[in-house]
Amino acid sequence: MPTTFITGGTVVSATGRGAADILVDGERIAALLEPGSTVLGTDLARTADTVIDATGKYVVPGGIDAHTHMSMPFGGTTASDDFESGTRAAAWGGTTTIIDFAVQKFGERLQDCLATWHQMAAGQCAIDYGFHQIVGDVNDASLSALRELPAEGITSYKLFMAYPGVFYSDDAQILRAMQIGASTGLMTMMHAENGPAIDVLVGQLLEQGKTDPYYHGIARAWQLEEEATHRAIMLADLTGAPLYVVHVSAKQAVAQVASARDRGRNVFGETCPQYLYLSLEEQLGAPGFEGAKWVCSTPLRSRAERHQDHMWQALRTNDIQMVATDHCPFCMKGQKDMGVGDFSKIPNGIGSVEHRMDLMYQGVVEGRITLERWVEITSTTPARMFGLYGRKGVLAPGADADVVIYDPDGHTSIGLGKAHHMNMDHSAWEGFEIDGHVDTVLSRGKVVVDAGEYIGRKGDGRFVRRDPCQYLI
Ligand SMILES: [Zn+2]
Image (cartoon, rainbow, N blue to C red; front, side, top):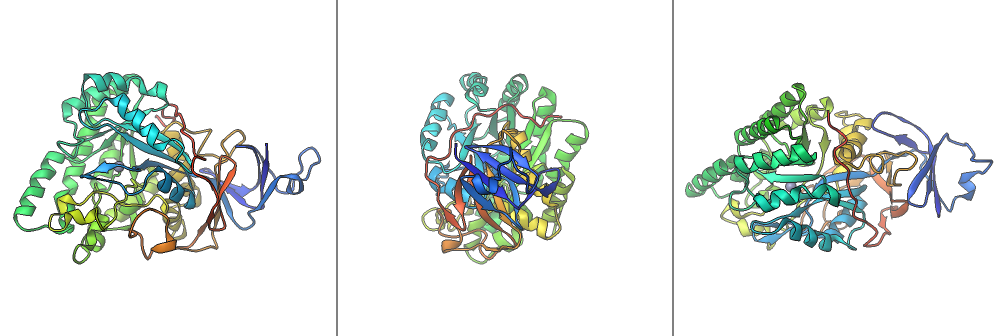
């Protein structure tokens, strides 16, 4: 097996940092060594097939983005990144594993849907990938299919309390699914927004002529996120199902998650970079139709109400456990512009898969989180939450050699053209400056990004079968 020796860097984990060299043998990490040490008298810096000098840099486990939507069908169109372009952009940004969603539409057999998504991803990916199962049609057949998912290496499924007539599940359906979650150990992931109430507000706003993207955020009021989060927590409490609330954006919803955790419940919360950095007023409220770039659900929240500061604080205190992107990009031309004159027709989603590691690292630079917490919320906790830990999320002997060499003296300007690699005609992050840089990325021992160049191949990434959640209380 070809060996790679990463020398001179500071290895950072969720629990500490220190100078160490890493020996990679084939696809796995063989050893972490004290700097300058020899193995059986062999100087690895001279004998390894590849030597990577990480002097002055951080060496961290590859990022795990546990919430992406490649080729997601939504609102009559399809997310503009497919598995090839989306995972390549992820690799560029230091993410070496995604967990995407197999999307069961209403009326479709769950097993058929999963087979379709396997077909879409197989041989296309630059990095490893797993699936969560979206259940868009909770009925007897899909409930019994849910029980078979762990044997397929899929240990989580997602329900929607939003989008009536599309993905929506009512309380009875949620309760029945959660009973299966409790008995099988499947993690229930919840999009927690009160969809029927939102639809009433959407109709009323449009009738009043309030059609701009800004009103997407007004219709999806924080009260409807808090209420749904509370309801999901209570149903999980009743059934004993573990619950993972996706894309928490309102500080009041954070409080619901925190309060459940304080009662010892297996309730977890995810947030996304957009809820830490962007706002209702600045982005959704941008002049004209510009705000459409940032139409996503849950929506961006008010800066005046300080949701963003609360979210950073929740990341520090572990009231929120991890950061994913909810990567679901749509182009302005031909996709987002379907909603000119009617914000409810704008496809929901932002593209961020390439920028998550950088954007969260900027939180370290600005003193909002520690370096170790950065590793924890972007890699180690996602691995534990979704049953990958040991193989992923940690740099230790036997783990997959998914490694990012990050330069704290480098710089990344996010913007258009060559400054990002997602399949979009704009960037939701244009103008963001990062005081750090992803230098080198290894995916299972293979260098896929080096010195700003992608040198991997489509098909490098493999489907990863996941174990049950390793984060339960
Ligand atoms: Zn999503």
